[in-house]
Image (tube, rainbow, N blue to C red):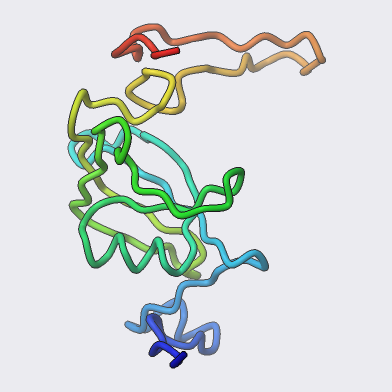
Amino acid sequence: MTDSPPRFATRGDHESIETGTAFAPKFDADGLIVAIAVDADDGEVLMVAHMNAEALARTIESGEGWFWSRSRRKLWKKGEESGNVLAIDDIRVDCDQDAILLKARIAGSGVACHQGYRSCFYRSVPTGVAPTPETALAFDQAMRRVERKS
């Protein structure tokens, strides 16, 4: 078995990471980086997931969203089962290169969330009161696009 060439630059010093042109993503101790997908037109947050180096490389190469499932411990392509593929328009990295921002469009029914909502952020947490174990989330039903299949 031969070693594959490095996909990303080696991380340099603080200055080069934050102001240089080398793409040197900082993966965490589990080999993951946070990826935030937003609608390319209106900036609405669609989903947050994690990528390993393979998922990030496949996303860059294919122009479609690939991620690492922490619960299933496997690589997955957004929309491979639902048809709601995440088509990437632009990929951004934050200042210290430890988060990825995907400006994207959702193919298929336009649903990012497996629960049938446009965005995975379809519930809100009440503010202005101390949280308790009884704190209830509020659903934004306007985000519901399709009924979830059982």
